[in-house]
Image 1 (spheres, rainbow, N blue to C red):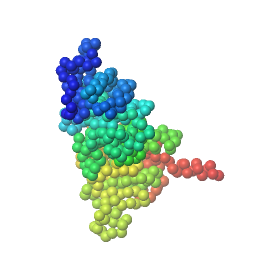
Image 2: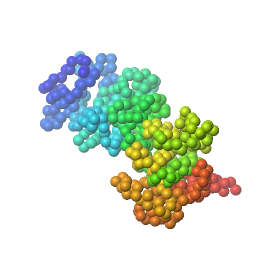
Image 3: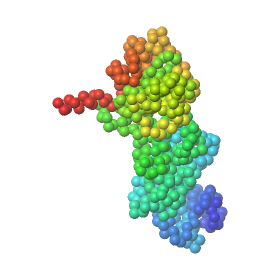
Image 4: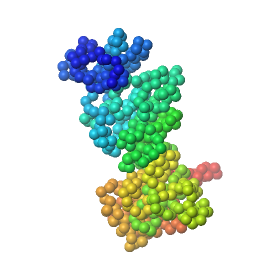
Length: 497
Protein backbone atom coordinates (compact mmCIF):
# COMPACT_ATOMS: atom_id res chain seq x y z
CA UNK A 1 0.00 0.00 0.00
CA UNK A 2 1.08 3.58 -0.67
CA UNK A 3 2.21 5.10 2.62
CA UNK A 4 0.90 8.66 2.07
CA UNK A 5 -2.86 9.23 1.84
CA UNK A 6 -4.14 9.66 -1.69
CA UNK A 7 -5.25 13.04 -2.96
CA UNK A 8 -7.89 11.30 -5.10
CA UNK A 9 -11.20 9.62 -4.33
CA UNK A 10 -14.27 8.50 -6.27
CA UNK A 11 -15.57 11.40 -8.33
CA UNK A 12 -12.39 13.50 -8.08
CA UNK A 13 -11.56 15.44 -11.26
CA UNK A 14 -8.00 16.23 -12.31
CA UNK A 15 -6.85 18.32 -15.23
CA UNK A 16 -10.42 19.53 -15.63
CA UNK A 17 -10.94 16.40 -17.73
CA UNK A 18 -10.45 13.07 -15.93
CA UNK A 19 -12.97 11.79 -13.34
CA UNK A 20 -11.77 9.05 -10.99
CA UNK A 21 -13.95 5.92 -11.17
CA UNK A 22 -12.19 3.34 -9.03
CA UNK A 23 -8.83 2.10 -7.74
CA UNK A 24 -7.03 -0.40 -9.94
CA UNK A 25 -4.05 -1.15 -7.70
CA UNK A 26 -1.47 0.23 -5.33
CA UNK A 27 2.15 -0.23 -4.37
CA UNK A 28 4.70 1.22 -1.97
CA UNK A 29 5.08 4.51 -3.83
CA UNK A 30 2.00 4.86 -6.01
CA UNK A 31 -1.65 4.12 -6.70
CA UNK A 32 -3.34 3.53 -10.04
CA UNK A 33 -6.94 4.59 -10.71
CA UNK A 34 -9.35 4.16 -13.57
CA UNK A 35 -10.67 7.48 -14.84
CA UNK A 36 -13.28 8.45 -17.42
CA UNK A 37 -12.62 11.16 -19.97
CA UNK A 38 -15.12 14.03 -19.68
CA UNK A 39 -14.25 15.32 -23.16
CA UNK A 40 -14.37 11.92 -24.88
CA UNK A 41 -17.44 10.10 -23.52
CA UNK A 42 -16.86 6.39 -23.06
CA UNK A 43 -13.05 6.72 -23.10
CA UNK A 44 -11.28 5.33 -20.04
CA UNK A 45 -7.73 6.03 -18.85
CA UNK A 46 -5.41 4.79 -16.12
CA UNK A 47 -4.15 7.51 -13.78
CA UNK A 48 -1.04 6.82 -11.75
CA UNK A 49 -0.56 8.86 -8.60
CA UNK A 50 2.98 8.95 -7.16
CA UNK A 51 4.61 10.96 -4.41
CA UNK A 52 7.99 12.65 -4.75
CA UNK A 53 9.78 15.10 -2.50
CA UNK A 54 10.69 18.57 -3.74
CA UNK A 55 14.32 17.52 -4.25
CA UNK A 56 13.45 14.98 -6.95
CA UNK A 57 10.43 16.72 -8.51
CA UNK A 58 12.55 18.15 -11.34
CA UNK A 59 13.99 14.73 -12.12
CA UNK A 60 10.52 13.17 -12.15
CA UNK A 61 9.27 15.90 -14.47
CA UNK A 62 12.10 15.19 -16.90
CA UNK A 63 11.39 11.47 -16.78
CA UNK A 64 7.67 12.10 -17.37
CA UNK A 65 8.46 14.14 -20.47
CA UNK A 66 10.63 11.29 -21.68
CA UNK A 67 7.84 8.76 -21.16
CA UNK A 68 5.33 10.93 -23.01
CA UNK A 69 7.64 10.87 -26.04
CA UNK A 70 7.56 7.06 -26.29
CA UNK A 71 5.40 5.33 -28.88
CA UNK A 72 5.31 1.54 -29.17
CA UNK A 73 2.41 -0.93 -29.49
CA UNK A 74 3.58 -2.81 -26.38
CA UNK A 75 3.72 0.30 -24.23
CA UNK A 76 0.75 2.22 -22.84
CA UNK A 77 0.70 5.77 -24.16
CA UNK A 78 1.41 8.46 -21.59
CA UNK A 79 -0.98 11.21 -22.67
CA UNK A 80 -0.91 13.71 -19.81
CA UNK A 81 1.09 14.77 -16.75
CA UNK A 82 0.06 16.81 -13.66
CA UNK A 83 1.90 17.99 -10.56
CA UNK A 84 0.63 19.00 -7.14
CA UNK A 85 3.75 20.50 -5.46
CA UNK A 86 2.19 21.17 -2.01
CA UNK A 87 1.53 17.45 -1.51
CA UNK A 88 4.33 16.14 -3.70
CA UNK A 89 1.78 14.24 -5.78
CA UNK A 90 2.47 13.55 -9.44
CA UNK A 91 -0.11 12.22 -11.88
CA UNK A 92 0.49 10.35 -15.13
CA UNK A 93 -2.48 9.69 -17.41
CA UNK A 94 -2.03 6.69 -19.67
CA UNK A 95 -3.87 4.06 -21.71
CA UNK A 96 -6.08 1.76 -19.70
CA UNK A 97 -5.06 -1.81 -20.62
CA UNK A 98 -7.84 -4.38 -20.45
CA UNK A 99 -6.57 -7.74 -19.27
CA UNK A 100 -4.71 -9.31 -16.36
CA UNK A 101 -1.13 -9.25 -15.17
CA UNK A 102 1.20 -12.07 -16.13
CA UNK A 103 1.38 -12.99 -12.44
CA UNK A 104 -2.40 -13.41 -12.27
CA UNK A 105 -2.38 -15.39 -15.50
CA UNK A 106 0.22 -17.77 -14.08
CA UNK A 107 -1.79 -18.24 -10.91
CA UNK A 108 -4.72 -19.23 -13.10
CA UNK A 109 -2.51 -21.96 -14.57
CA UNK A 110 -1.24 -22.87 -11.09
CA UNK A 111 2.27 -21.74 -12.00
CA UNK A 112 2.07 -23.18 -15.49
CA UNK A 113 2.23 -21.20 -18.72
CA UNK A 114 2.00 -23.26 -21.94
CA UNK A 115 5.51 -24.01 -23.20
CA UNK A 116 4.67 -22.95 -26.76
CA UNK A 117 3.95 -19.42 -25.47
CA UNK A 118 7.28 -18.84 -23.71
CA UNK A 119 9.55 -18.05 -26.67
CA UNK A 120 6.94 -15.83 -28.41
CA UNK A 121 6.43 -14.10 -25.06
CA UNK A 122 10.18 -13.52 -24.71
CA UNK A 123 10.34 -12.09 -28.25
CA UNK A 124 7.48 -9.69 -27.48
CA UNK A 125 9.24 -8.40 -24.37
CA UNK A 126 12.54 -8.15 -26.26
CA UNK A 127 10.82 -6.17 -29.00
CA UNK A 128 9.80 -3.43 -26.59
CA UNK A 129 13.14 -3.54 -24.73
CA UNK A 130 14.97 -3.12 -28.03
CA UNK A 131 12.80 -0.09 -28.76
CA UNK A 132 13.52 1.46 -25.34
CA UNK A 133 17.23 0.71 -25.38
CA UNK A 134 17.76 2.24 -28.83
CA UNK A 135 16.21 5.62 -27.91
CA UNK A 136 18.55 8.60 -27.61
CA UNK A 137 19.31 8.56 -24.79
CA UNK A 138 18.47 4.91 -24.05
CA UNK A 139 15.54 4.25 -21.70
CA UNK A 140 16.20 1.61 -19.04
CA UNK A 141 13.04 0.02 -17.63
CA UNK A 142 14.61 -1.39 -14.41
CA UNK A 143 11.55 -3.23 -13.03
CA UNK A 144 10.68 -6.11 -15.35
CA UNK A 145 8.57 -8.61 -13.38
CA UNK A 146 5.27 -10.54 -13.72
CA UNK A 147 3.16 -7.83 -12.04
CA UNK A 148 4.38 -5.21 -14.53
CA UNK A 149 3.34 -7.13 -17.63
CA UNK A 150 -0.28 -7.09 -18.78
CA UNK A 151 -1.76 -9.85 -20.92
CA UNK A 152 -4.61 -8.68 -23.14
CA UNK A 153 -7.56 -10.86 -24.20
CA UNK A 154 -5.78 -11.18 -27.60
CA UNK A 155 -2.75 -12.69 -25.82
CA UNK A 156 -0.64 -9.58 -26.42
CA UNK A 157 1.88 -8.51 -23.78
CA UNK A 158 2.01 -4.88 -22.66
CA UNK A 159 4.74 -3.47 -20.43
CA UNK A 160 3.28 -1.24 -17.74
CA UNK A 161 4.42 0.85 -14.74
CA UNK A 162 7.34 3.08 -15.67
CA UNK A 163 7.67 4.32 -12.10
CA UNK A 164 11.44 3.77 -11.92
CA UNK A 165 12.40 3.86 -15.60
CA UNK A 166 15.27 6.23 -16.35
CA UNK A 167 17.37 7.55 -19.18
CA UNK A 168 20.90 6.18 -19.34
CA UNK A 169 23.46 8.85 -18.47
CA UNK A 170 26.90 8.03 -19.83
CA UNK A 171 28.70 10.30 -17.35
CA UNK A 172 27.48 8.41 -14.26
CA UNK A 173 29.33 5.50 -12.66
CA UNK A 174 26.26 4.23 -10.84
CA UNK A 175 22.60 5.01 -10.29
CA UNK A 176 21.61 7.81 -7.95
CA UNK A 177 18.66 5.77 -6.68
CA UNK A 178 18.80 1.99 -6.22
CA UNK A 179 15.42 0.53 -7.08
CA UNK A 180 14.03 -2.71 -8.42
CA UNK A 181 12.31 -5.87 -7.25
CA UNK A 182 14.43 -8.38 -5.34
CA UNK A 183 14.85 -11.55 -7.36
CA UNK A 184 14.30 -9.82 -10.69
CA UNK A 185 16.62 -6.80 -10.49
CA UNK A 186 20.22 -7.03 -11.73
CA UNK A 187 23.06 -6.84 -9.15
CA UNK A 188 24.16 -3.42 -10.41
CA UNK A 189 20.79 -1.98 -9.35
CA UNK A 190 21.97 -2.28 -5.74
CA UNK A 191 25.09 -0.17 -5.90
CA UNK A 192 27.43 -2.24 -8.08
CA UNK A 193 27.23 0.21 -11.00
CA UNK A 194 24.94 2.16 -13.28
CA UNK A 195 22.05 0.30 -14.84
CA UNK A 196 22.02 0.00 -18.61
CA UNK A 197 20.36 -2.18 -21.26
CA UNK A 198 22.08 -5.28 -19.86
CA UNK A 199 20.32 -4.73 -16.53
CA UNK A 200 16.94 -5.13 -18.21
CA UNK A 201 18.26 -8.25 -19.98
CA UNK A 202 19.18 -9.76 -16.61
CA UNK A 203 15.61 -9.13 -15.46
CA UNK A 204 14.32 -10.83 -18.61
CA UNK A 205 16.44 -13.88 -17.75
CA UNK A 206 14.99 -13.87 -14.22
CA UNK A 207 11.48 -13.59 -15.65
CA UNK A 208 12.02 -16.48 -18.08
CA UNK A 209 13.48 -18.68 -15.32
CA UNK A 210 10.46 -17.81 -13.17
CA UNK A 211 8.15 -19.01 -15.95
CA UNK A 212 10.21 -22.11 -16.68
CA UNK A 213 10.17 -23.22 -13.02
CA UNK A 214 6.48 -22.58 -12.42
CA UNK A 215 7.19 -19.47 -10.38
CA UNK A 216 9.63 -21.15 -7.99
CA UNK A 217 12.91 -19.50 -9.06
CA UNK A 218 14.04 -16.21 -10.59
CA UNK A 219 17.75 -16.59 -9.74
CA UNK A 220 20.10 -19.35 -10.91
CA UNK A 221 20.96 -21.12 -7.66
CA UNK A 222 22.04 -24.63 -6.75
CA UNK A 223 19.38 -27.17 -7.59
CA UNK A 224 17.34 -24.96 -9.91
CA UNK A 225 17.88 -27.43 -12.79
CA UNK A 226 15.59 -29.94 -11.13
CA UNK A 227 12.65 -27.52 -11.28
CA UNK A 228 12.90 -26.56 -14.96
CA UNK A 229 10.03 -28.08 -16.88
CA UNK A 230 11.02 -30.98 -19.08
CA UNK A 231 9.02 -30.09 -22.19
CA UNK A 232 10.53 -26.63 -22.68
CA UNK A 233 12.57 -25.82 -25.81
CA UNK A 234 16.18 -26.77 -25.15
CA UNK A 235 17.69 -23.66 -26.64
CA UNK A 236 16.13 -21.55 -23.85
CA UNK A 237 18.46 -22.94 -21.17
CA UNK A 238 21.78 -21.48 -22.40
CA UNK A 239 20.03 -18.21 -23.26
CA UNK A 240 18.65 -17.89 -19.71
CA UNK A 241 22.01 -18.80 -18.19
CA UNK A 242 23.77 -16.09 -20.18
CA UNK A 243 21.12 -13.48 -19.38
CA UNK A 244 21.60 -14.18 -15.66
CA UNK A 245 25.37 -13.73 -15.51
CA UNK A 246 26.39 -11.60 -12.52
CA UNK A 247 28.69 -9.33 -14.52
CA UNK A 248 27.06 -7.27 -17.31
CA UNK A 249 29.94 -7.84 -19.72
CA UNK A 250 29.27 -11.62 -19.57
CA UNK A 251 25.61 -11.26 -20.59
CA UNK A 252 24.10 -10.61 -23.98
CA UNK A 253 24.93 -7.02 -24.80
CA UNK A 254 21.69 -5.97 -26.46
CA UNK A 255 18.07 -7.02 -26.89
CA UNK A 256 18.72 -7.41 -30.60
CA UNK A 257 21.44 -9.94 -29.86
CA UNK A 258 19.01 -12.04 -27.76
CA UNK A 259 16.33 -11.80 -30.45
CA UNK A 260 18.80 -13.09 -33.03
CA UNK A 261 19.85 -15.95 -30.74
CA UNK A 262 16.30 -17.08 -30.02
CA UNK A 263 15.25 -16.91 -33.66
CA UNK A 264 18.37 -18.68 -34.88
CA UNK A 265 17.93 -21.38 -32.24
CA UNK A 266 14.22 -21.94 -32.75
CA UNK A 267 14.33 -21.91 -36.55
CA UNK A 268 17.74 -23.50 -37.00
CA UNK A 269 18.08 -25.04 -40.46
CA UNK A 270 21.06 -26.73 -42.12
CA UNK A 271 23.12 -24.31 -44.15
CA UNK A 272 22.85 -24.39 -47.90
CA UNK A 273 25.69 -25.72 -50.00
CA UNK A 274 28.34 -23.14 -50.72
CA UNK A 275 27.64 -21.07 -47.62
CA UNK A 276 30.81 -20.06 -45.76
CA UNK A 277 31.98 -21.45 -42.43
CA UNK A 278 31.18 -18.10 -40.87
CA UNK A 279 27.44 -18.36 -41.58
CA UNK A 280 24.81 -18.03 -38.85
CA UNK A 281 24.67 -21.74 -38.02
CA UNK A 282 28.36 -21.72 -37.09
CA UNK A 283 27.99 -18.57 -34.98
CA UNK A 284 25.41 -20.27 -32.74
CA UNK A 285 26.43 -19.62 -29.14
CA UNK A 286 24.29 -22.28 -27.52
CA UNK A 287 24.41 -26.06 -27.38
CA UNK A 288 22.98 -28.48 -29.93
CA UNK A 289 21.73 -31.85 -28.67
CA UNK A 290 22.10 -35.14 -30.53
CA UNK A 291 20.02 -37.98 -29.01
CA UNK A 292 20.83 -41.58 -29.97
CA UNK A 293 18.07 -44.11 -29.30
CA UNK A 294 18.38 -47.81 -30.02
CA UNK A 295 15.36 -49.67 -31.34
CA UNK A 296 16.32 -52.74 -29.31
CA UNK A 297 19.14 -54.06 -27.14
CA UNK A 298 22.26 -54.79 -29.15
CA UNK A 299 21.30 -52.50 -32.06
CA UNK A 300 24.49 -50.45 -31.64
CA UNK A 301 23.23 -47.25 -30.01
CA UNK A 302 26.23 -46.78 -27.69
CA UNK A 303 28.74 -47.64 -30.44
CA UNK A 304 27.05 -45.11 -32.74
CA UNK A 305 26.89 -42.44 -30.02
CA UNK A 306 30.63 -42.79 -29.41
CA UNK A 307 31.43 -42.63 -33.13
CA UNK A 308 29.23 -39.54 -33.57
CA UNK A 309 30.77 -37.79 -30.54
CA UNK A 310 34.34 -38.25 -31.70
CA UNK A 311 33.41 -37.23 -35.23
CA UNK A 312 31.88 -33.99 -33.88
CA UNK A 313 34.87 -33.39 -31.61
CA UNK A 314 37.25 -33.67 -34.58
CA UNK A 315 35.13 -31.21 -36.54
CA UNK A 316 34.06 -28.65 -33.96
CA UNK A 317 35.51 -29.57 -30.53
CA UNK A 318 33.69 -28.96 -27.22
CA UNK A 319 31.59 -32.15 -27.14
CA UNK A 320 30.00 -33.99 -24.20
CA UNK A 321 28.77 -37.59 -24.45
CA UNK A 322 26.14 -38.30 -21.81
CA UNK A 323 24.99 -41.74 -20.66
CA UNK A 324 21.38 -40.95 -19.74
CA UNK A 325 20.62 -44.10 -17.79
CA UNK A 326 21.29 -44.46 -14.07
CA UNK A 327 21.86 -48.23 -14.25
CA UNK A 328 23.90 -48.44 -17.47
CA UNK A 329 27.36 -50.02 -17.20
CA UNK A 330 29.06 -49.26 -20.52
CA UNK A 331 30.65 -45.95 -19.54
CA UNK A 332 31.76 -47.30 -16.16
CA UNK A 333 33.68 -50.08 -17.89
CA UNK A 334 35.18 -47.59 -20.33
CA UNK A 335 36.25 -45.31 -17.46
CA UNK A 336 38.01 -48.23 -15.78
CA UNK A 337 40.02 -48.82 -18.96
CA UNK A 338 40.84 -45.14 -19.44
CA UNK A 339 41.88 -44.57 -15.81
CA UNK A 340 43.48 -48.00 -15.30
CA UNK A 341 41.37 -48.95 -12.29
CA UNK A 342 40.28 -52.45 -11.32
CA UNK A 343 37.01 -53.92 -12.52
CA UNK A 344 34.12 -52.72 -10.39
CA UNK A 345 36.12 -49.88 -8.83
CA UNK A 346 34.64 -46.88 -10.64
CA UNK A 347 36.02 -43.43 -9.92
CA UNK A 348 33.99 -41.10 -7.70
CA UNK A 349 33.98 -38.65 -10.60
CA UNK A 350 31.34 -39.37 -13.21
CA UNK A 351 33.21 -37.36 -15.83
CA UNK A 352 36.25 -38.56 -17.76
CA UNK A 353 37.81 -37.63 -21.07
CA UNK A 354 38.79 -39.56 -24.19
CA UNK A 355 40.46 -37.73 -27.08
CA UNK A 356 38.77 -34.43 -26.31
CA UNK A 357 35.28 -35.84 -25.68
CA UNK A 358 33.92 -35.39 -22.15
CA UNK A 359 32.11 -38.57 -21.08
CA UNK A 360 29.45 -38.33 -18.38
CA UNK A 361 28.36 -41.69 -17.01
CA UNK A 362 25.02 -42.58 -15.42
CA UNK A 363 23.69 -39.05 -15.74
CA UNK A 364 20.33 -37.67 -14.64
CA UNK A 365 18.12 -35.31 -16.58
CA UNK A 366 18.91 -32.48 -14.12
CA UNK A 367 22.60 -32.92 -14.97
CA UNK A 368 21.78 -32.61 -18.66
CA UNK A 369 20.00 -29.31 -18.06
CA UNK A 370 23.04 -28.05 -16.17
CA UNK A 371 25.33 -29.05 -19.05
CA UNK A 372 23.10 -27.18 -21.50
CA UNK A 373 24.02 -23.98 -19.71
CA UNK A 374 27.73 -24.63 -20.22
CA UNK A 375 30.10 -24.11 -23.13
CA UNK A 376 29.62 -27.33 -25.10
CA UNK A 377 28.93 -26.95 -28.80
CA UNK A 378 27.30 -30.40 -28.92
CA UNK A 379 25.88 -32.74 -26.31
CA UNK A 380 25.34 -36.32 -27.48
CA UNK A 381 22.87 -38.33 -25.40
CA UNK A 382 23.29 -42.10 -25.32
CA UNK A 383 19.73 -43.15 -24.48
CA UNK A 384 20.30 -46.88 -24.87
CA UNK A 385 17.37 -48.94 -26.10
CA UNK A 386 14.74 -48.16 -23.47
CA UNK A 387 11.67 -46.07 -24.12
CA UNK A 388 10.80 -44.90 -20.63
CA UNK A 389 9.19 -41.47 -20.40
CA UNK A 390 12.35 -39.58 -19.45
CA UNK A 391 14.52 -40.93 -22.25
CA UNK A 392 11.78 -40.72 -24.85
CA UNK A 393 11.16 -37.11 -23.84
CA UNK A 394 14.84 -36.28 -24.31
CA UNK A 395 14.84 -37.98 -27.70
CA UNK A 396 11.80 -36.03 -28.91
CA UNK A 397 13.26 -32.72 -27.74
CA UNK A 398 16.70 -33.20 -29.28
CA UNK A 399 17.90 -31.05 -32.15
CA UNK A 400 19.15 -34.18 -33.96
CA UNK A 401 17.27 -37.35 -32.93
CA UNK A 402 19.05 -40.49 -34.21
CA UNK A 403 17.24 -43.84 -34.25
CA UNK A 404 19.66 -46.79 -34.44
CA UNK A 405 18.33 -50.14 -35.62
CA UNK A 406 19.94 -53.39 -36.63
CA UNK A 407 21.14 -53.51 -40.22
CA UNK A 408 20.28 -57.20 -40.53
CA UNK A 409 17.68 -57.77 -43.24
CA UNK A 410 15.30 -59.52 -40.86
CA UNK A 411 15.57 -56.73 -38.24
CA UNK A 412 15.18 -53.63 -40.41
CA UNK A 413 11.42 -53.67 -39.85
CA UNK A 414 12.04 -52.92 -36.16
CA UNK A 415 12.63 -49.29 -37.10
CA UNK A 416 9.41 -49.08 -39.06
CA UNK A 417 7.59 -50.49 -36.04
CA UNK A 418 9.09 -47.83 -33.76
CA UNK A 419 8.12 -45.07 -36.19
CA UNK A 420 4.53 -46.34 -36.28
CA UNK A 421 4.32 -46.60 -32.49
CA UNK A 422 5.39 -42.96 -32.16
CA UNK A 423 3.49 -41.59 -35.15
CA UNK A 424 1.62 -39.09 -32.97
CA UNK A 425 4.93 -37.23 -32.62
CA UNK A 426 6.46 -35.11 -35.43
CA UNK A 427 9.22 -37.13 -37.11
CA UNK A 428 10.46 -34.81 -39.85
CA UNK A 429 13.82 -34.17 -38.14
CA UNK A 430 14.51 -37.79 -37.16
CA UNK A 431 17.56 -39.56 -38.61
CA UNK A 432 17.58 -43.35 -39.00
CA UNK A 433 20.93 -45.16 -38.78
CA UNK A 434 21.43 -48.82 -39.79
CA UNK A 435 24.83 -50.20 -38.73
CA UNK A 436 26.21 -52.77 -41.22
CA UNK A 437 23.16 -52.43 -43.48
CA UNK A 438 23.39 -52.59 -47.25
CA UNK A 439 22.57 -49.53 -49.33
CA UNK A 440 19.60 -51.44 -50.74
CA UNK A 441 18.18 -52.01 -47.22
CA UNK A 442 18.51 -48.29 -46.49
CA UNK A 443 16.82 -47.46 -49.80
CA UNK A 444 13.85 -49.72 -49.06
CA UNK A 445 13.42 -48.22 -45.59
CA UNK A 446 13.49 -44.70 -47.03
CA UNK A 447 10.67 -45.67 -49.34
CA UNK A 448 8.64 -47.39 -46.64
CA UNK A 449 8.97 -44.51 -44.19
CA UNK A 450 8.73 -41.87 -46.93
CA UNK A 451 11.72 -40.28 -45.23
CA UNK A 452 15.03 -39.20 -46.80
CA UNK A 453 17.19 -39.32 -43.67
CA UNK A 454 17.99 -43.03 -43.57
CA UNK A 455 21.70 -43.88 -43.44
CA UNK A 456 23.50 -47.21 -43.80
CA UNK A 457 26.50 -47.11 -41.43
CA UNK A 458 29.61 -48.97 -42.60
CA UNK A 459 31.66 -51.37 -40.49
CA UNK A 460 33.62 -49.26 -37.98
CA UNK A 461 35.59 -51.38 -35.55
CA UNK A 462 37.03 -48.50 -33.49
CA UNK A 463 34.49 -45.72 -32.91
CA UNK A 464 37.12 -43.55 -31.20
CA UNK A 465 39.20 -43.26 -34.38
CA UNK A 466 38.37 -41.57 -37.72
CA UNK A 467 37.16 -43.77 -40.55
CA UNK A 468 36.80 -42.39 -44.06
CA UNK A 469 33.61 -44.28 -44.89
CA UNK A 470 31.92 -43.47 -41.58
CA UNK A 471 32.99 -39.83 -41.79
CA UNK A 472 31.49 -39.61 -45.25
CA UNK A 473 28.11 -40.79 -43.95
CA UNK A 474 28.25 -38.45 -40.94
CA UNK A 475 29.23 -35.56 -43.20
CA UNK A 476 25.95 -36.16 -45.00
CA UNK A 477 23.99 -36.51 -41.77
CA UNK A 478 25.34 -33.22 -40.35
CA UNK A 479 25.59 -31.39 -43.67
CA UNK A 480 25.70 -27.62 -43.20
CA UNK A 481 25.88 -27.83 -39.42
CA UNK A 482 29.67 -28.06 -39.06
CA UNK A 483 32.44 -27.12 -41.49
CA UNK A 484 34.14 -29.69 -43.69
CA UNK A 485 37.62 -29.15 -42.27
CA UNK A 486 39.25 -31.64 -44.60
CA UNK A 487 38.06 -29.77 -47.68
CA UNK A 488 39.26 -26.45 -46.30
CA UNK A 489 42.73 -27.85 -45.53
CA UNK A 490 42.96 -29.13 -49.08
CA UNK A 491 42.09 -25.71 -50.49
CA UNK A 492 44.67 -24.07 -48.21
CA UNK A 493 47.42 -26.45 -49.28
CA UNK A 494 46.48 -26.01 -52.92
CA UNK A 495 46.85 -22.24 -52.61
CA UNK A 496 50.30 -22.59 -51.07
CA UNK A 497 51.71 -24.50 -54.02
